[in-house]
Length: 319
Image (cartoon, rainbow, N blue to C red; front, side, top):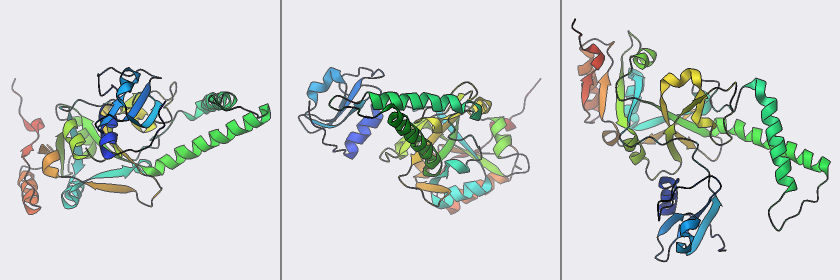
């Protein structure tokens, strides 16, 4: 078996991300527990394959046990919306970038939660048993010479380390939230731009959002899954893509950035080409008719050319 070189070029990281679920050579889907081989073929081109095509790998950069993504990736044509008041729209135009809020500043105390506090003993018991089993059954070539008491102490230490990592994640994870919907949402207009509040919604697609971050491998884009924390747990690596069922009306797709170290910032802005990502700007139905021209003037002042229209909610019914 080849030694791993850990040579991870941007091209290899890109093919790992884009072909995560399937062998990049033959297209065979991975199953949980399969081995994924990332490396380079005889021509030096990046390759990401399963055991089905491992003979094509001439240099193994990384080899690991494959697991499914923590999130579902929406189709490129999926429509995404971001509703905002006028102040946030002005910041978007001024900064020419998307704002990512730190996980512990999103306004939901359940962000990043693993489960309901009443079930924490079950969570702890599961991981204590998991760690004890792992310590007693090391990989081939290693032996466990610890006593039962030492194994239990080490398992408790690892659990504490796991919890410390979860706390740290709150301060090293940043999120940009979007609403998935083919049409406007009156509920979200009322939530983010209620009557007597000037606001807009910007519309994009999942494909456009992915394209602007195509070479930024720190960004993950996926659907949020809504679960009942009273009877379910979020996994260690997927909690940022799990929220309470009571919020499933949000139909959220989020872009997530994880940074290496804690920073004293409650948010970060990533520069983007707004004309590439924004398909149209929709003016809130709760604003006066003249506000549309104000939005158009703002775009002109910032030298940004984007289509602007009034909300479809302003159309009239007949009976």
